[in-house]
Amino acid sequence: VKRIKYDLTCLTSEAIGPTGLSTEDIEGARERLEHAVEYLAELGTAHEPNFMHMPDEAVADIQLRAAQLQSRFETMVVLGIGGSSLGARAAIEGLIRRRSGRFVDGTPCSGLRVQFIENVDASDLLDLLETVDLETTVFNVVTKSGNTIETMSAFLIIRERLINAFGMDGYRERVICTTDPTRGALRGVIAKDELEAWDVPPGVGGRFSVMSPVGLIPIAAAGVDIEAFLRGAARALASAVDRNVLENPAALFALTQTLLYERGRTQVVFMPYATSLFALGQWFAQLWAESLGKLRYLGDETPHHVGPTPIAALGATDQHSLLQLFMEGDDVRNIVFVEVGDTPDAPSVPSTRSLCEPIVHLGGKSLDEIRSAELCGVREGLVEHARPSSTFTLDRLDAEYVGGLMMTLMCSTVVAGSLFDVNPFDQPGVELGKRFAHGLLGRDKERHYASQIHERIAARRTWIVTV
Ligand code: PA5
Image (tube, rainbow, N blue to C red; front, side):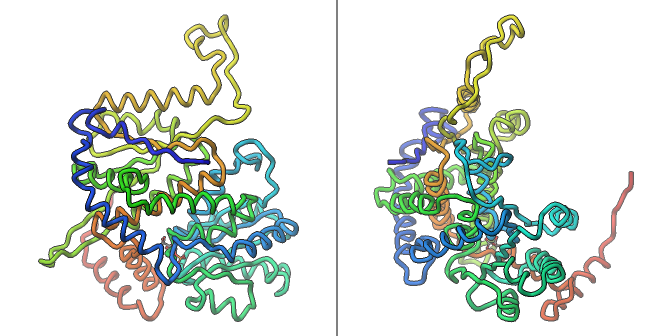
């Protein structure tokens, strides 16, 4: 059985002294945690499908469609942003080597090469259009609201190119859409252009949607075994609702993060020691920030701002960058490491006795051994500075483990939402920015925002200097 380990040792006071969490701290919050897990479990049995409902019936359809796409196309370009791209990118980049297109364990992968257009950036889109072969590329437009500026702008530009190059039928063949079943501008285009469409279940929010067609279509098209991915997720789900909360990794992760936050450790660094998992850190950062960074109004109508700041880092790369700050800088963070098992055929450093004496000890060591020593060294350095850390360990980097870790972190986010007393499923701050941008770009219903913004800018004394 593939089990993800979550090791909290190095955030306890036993390991790092009084800045750590004691058994009493954790035991003392047990009841609070039990309520939060109860809420999560209730969500799992809710009538309307949410992120905890596995898309069982859709899986076979998605696999079939992925196989058809693989036999017709070479590349898939996902047009999506935030929750509509980060989950798929985390899983695909986590499991497939970027350059060779093989799986991270070295086995061949026969899937499509999946690329992402997320940002609104002319140069990035031009770069794509200059390099991709439109003949063998399928575009997957993913937007739950169907109105997102970045995604829809890129889509409409590509739509025009495809129609010009291939006519309506050729365009239709090269586009699939994933969006809300009834609402949004993309639904209108789907109806008019008669495009292939997949539904995002209304109860599944963007950043929680990786186990829906939003994530599963690109992940399956890339050649990843989505049954294994969902199997890992289902196991993680069962463990996340375990009422024995002190044995429940998702619950303990949420609780320890909350307790550390309450003691002034307002930042959490997510630091996998595997290049391929950097995107997973970016996905986690969005999940944690957008779900937990909230403005709360308590009984007295006083606004309270809460929310831990997630930081995506990469071991060992960031040992040569951010780590100095983590070790000796302001003491406001805790580090979450992700350790992965050995890579098949990991190369070893050749013995170099006569060539380079100061690093002779590296001779004969595999890169995996070196990586483990680096991680262990950093963790112990943090212990020496009385700074808390914890570690998720995946014995292998495969679909089941990655699905399991992603589901664990999604469940943790919901539990943390209860502990922070915020709604983890909304994002009013993001929506405000979207409304302002639509107003500035001239949409009628937000036009008043544009005049307010222009007035505010005009009234401001500017302070600009030049080099
Ligand atoms: O998690 C979220 O809800 C957001 O990050 C959205 O996914 C993001 O804003 C994109 O929205 P949409 O899927 O509607 O294009």
